[in-house]
Amino acid sequence: MKKPQALLFALVSLSLLSFHTTALAGGQLYPKLYDATYEVKTPNGVSSMRSISDGKGHLRTEVNVGPSKMVTIMDYPGKTTYTLMEAQKMVIKNPISQEYEGDLTPELAKKKNAEDLGFKEVLGHNCHGWKLKLPNGVSEHWVDEKAGILVHSRTQAGNYITENNLKSVSMNQPKPDLFVVPAGYKPMGQ
Image 1 (cartoon, one colour):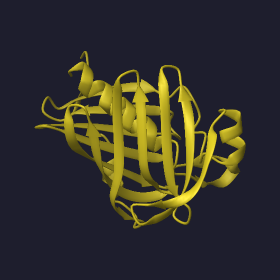
Image 2: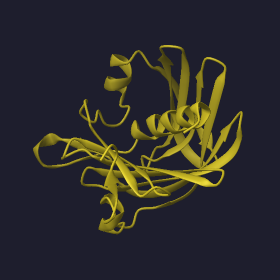
Image 3: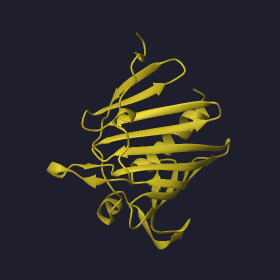
């Protein structure tokens, strides 16, 4: 994978993971139930992304960059991430090192030293905004107040800028097989 594509995937995934949650039994927070598509703008061009959550701790992110598609499945209850390489029918399995933190609430924003940007309409949605300082940049997020879905984000890491804009969202239950490594995929290195 080319370095700009890997950076794009990492920035896009991190932007989305911070804003989709719901409480489950035991007080654990997981991404809420949704299926959202985004337009992703980078210095390398425009691509698309789909982010899907079953509301039970499983999240799938698909990023289309040119002719290739990058897929990551996060299994929070199983504390495992799967990165699928569809063309090679291979999978990379890694442990999830941190618990999911949940929505960027005022309490979590304070803990992260985030700046409250207030409320405004973004892409037709009433949103609440936050600005977070990164080790080498800054990230701004606008979340739909009612649905709790990320509507727009802009992340600048050094000279690299990524923007995500919500194109569509569904709150219907996704198919369970979206969160399972397909049959026939070989673990990387075997």
